[in-house]
Amino acid sequence: MITASHNPPEYNGYKVYWEDGAQITSPKDQFIMEEVNRISDYTCIQTMEKEEAIQKGLYQEVGQEIDDAYIEELKKQSIHPEVIAKQKDISIVYTPLHGAGNEPVQKILKEMGFTNVFVVPEQEKPDGDFPTVEYPNPEDKKAFALALKWAKQRNAELVLATDPDADRLGVYVKEKETGEYIPLTGNMSAIVILNYLLAEKKKKAEIPQNAAIVKSIVSSTMADAIAKDYGVAVFDVLTGFKYIGEKIKEFEKTKEYTFLFGFEESYGCLVGTHARDKDGVVAVMMLCEAAAYYKEQNSSIEEELQKLYQKYGYYQEETMQVTLKGMDGAKKMQEMIDTLRKEPPKTLGRYKIQRIRDYKEQEILDIETGKKVATGLPKSNVLYYELENSAWCCVRPSGTEPKIKYYVGVRENTSQGAKEQIEKIKADLQNK
Image 1 (cartoon, rainbow, N blue to C red):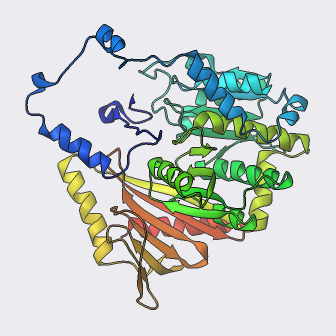
Image 2 (cartoon, rainbow, N blue to C red):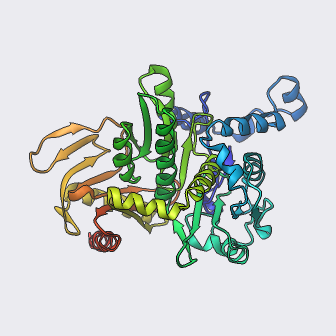
């Protein structure tokens, strides 16, 4: 699949999927690169006319039949479709950000019964130049400017944006008391969907005994606390949804676990196994259903989130990144990680470091005992610090852009306390 997704055009590329429907993992990626590197003369690459490809069964257009089958699979994930009929006029503003989400998102919301869906007209049609946004990424608050303008005019309760290839979802919700629109991070929207899934499936006795969720190592540990409450196993994988897809395949092969939900902090999640990659369309459907259900209970997504914080603690996560372009930048990026590896900090913010996971060395070091155990995950140039009081920090180079990324998570008794501790850790990191 050829796509730049939300990345700048100079980082355009392609995603390769395997027969299970998930993106490739090692060693398939290395085999492909070896084949690419063997090419010395591009005129030797074999080509074929479209007509010949059709005759040989090598070319097939994805049409309505696949679209319809996909929508039907999404509907199977619904838990309370009957509630939507009662709250069908919940006001939703949606933007595909000039990307691929427009038709499938409108179709699933219409077929689920939502009647008050407004699509931002300036951003409805596909346009690879993305004329109305500087950066078509739902993680960027500026990408919501037009959607929020329309939301205020229409008094919308939900404001949604999918990225250009529609695999990620950004969300704003309207706060009841102030009427202000509050952004949800990828972790927050995933937690809303996860809690809705588990709470409502439990009521209907639909949680399998061997149920599991899968998340990336840089995603909110609040998911672990919620899953534990429902007796659901949690698996952490390296960053990249391909590893979540790989886990689904493993579960289906061994039958040891049943996959319920997977997510990454970077606004991508998957409900069900109709796909093996993050799916912004099913995320839209589930979030809107949750909003309708909570509204029927005289509550809202924002209020339900606050209840979760009061129950489990105020979990907050943030990312910080440093861009380092060019060959010198790549060298500097490596030097920064090497320094952290050789001279690990003892504290970050007010928290002591208890364990260091070095995914490159594939080992976890217990600081107090000096004992080392295996990570159990593939080799990757990533450092992860387990801190006191369920806090954590992770450092890794970006896989798609010349950036070094820092991920920070804390759990405190108040929202303000969590924000303060996040800032202290970030300040520490900037001085490392």
